[in-house]
Image (cartoon, helix red, strand yellow):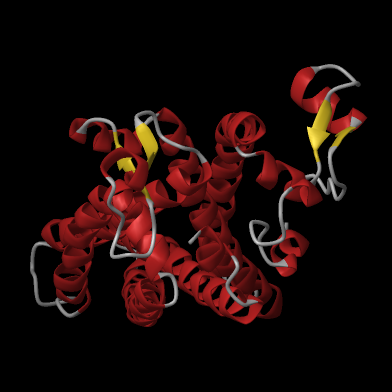
Length: 321
């Protein structure tokens, strides 16, 4: 069964990864643009500068487009998950059901509140109330990302209380005649361990990366436009974008990045090998990584090719790393 899950043709793995990356890029763009809309509307309420109102309205529409296309890709990803990787779902479904269940409510918040936010510009006299609706729409997006990233974290770092059970040895039964194994919680209450400390480091590291990525793209566009026409409104926008990016990048790199690096080093040796270019088989000393991780120059690490080809991600993944 393990070979059936992990030994799928490379083309299926590439198609799945491409779909996930597309959904990830669109979802990240939504998180950034809806936040820009909410911040711009707040600045309009503070300054009554028409530029900020126009910016908020424009980015609310852009965010809605990203959401719609991203949701379509997300549906395709889920369809592929339950068809191409159905054995994997049967293996780990019980372990990851809680975040997916909570994500459903977050998605419903987005579907209901985001159109309400976009189509009520100028129709709600109380600007503060409209801004609160925008915050609720943004919260739905961020809470959705929180739960999905909790699932991704569990695929890298096993949460406390999660066990791999051999059902056939324990009960003489298996799952629909396909697999003897299932990943489940030692105690049902342990399902909340999906959100343990390590998962939260992973989650907020990913959320900040999404905002930094999307705001950097927007900042690059505004910088290009400002160089061309020197409009003062562009410079106003750049000041907000660049300052926020600088602060978030500092938190991402010096705080969350540090903790994330420790977790990868301790709990995810395959990802560490891909990240650090350890393309060998077996144990070998890597002086630089050893010094950065442990303060010595003689620590040995498992190389990328120590894992079977069926377990390693497609080659293009570590090229991106």
